[in-house]
Image (cartoon, rainbow, N blue to C red; front, side):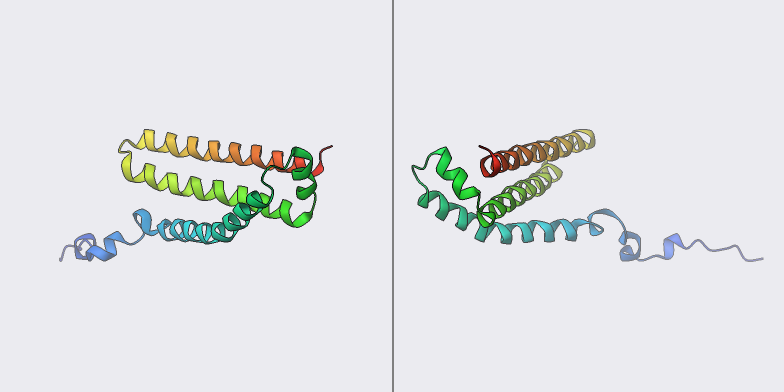
Length: 133
């Protein structure tokens, strides 16, 4: 009677690696970083142009400017995209340079929470200027 052969030793290195590690989500993360970077180019150029245009303006003038829908929406997009891109980039740095798994996870969670918190504060400030008295 022949003994059953184990399939594990017969697998190729590629066959053993498929489905493991960053191959599952690394490409998606990379694409999100690139798309947010591309989105930030026109948003940042717009923001710099508006800052130069409104140099020396007081709170009332900025509020009047942000009461228009286009500047308010672009400012909200800039904030959301900036902090999302920041969280993605810092996550890569932590994954690459922090060796301890617990510390890595803690730092990634802290980075995401801080980025969300800063984005919420920024969005609140824009909405207060746009709709406030």
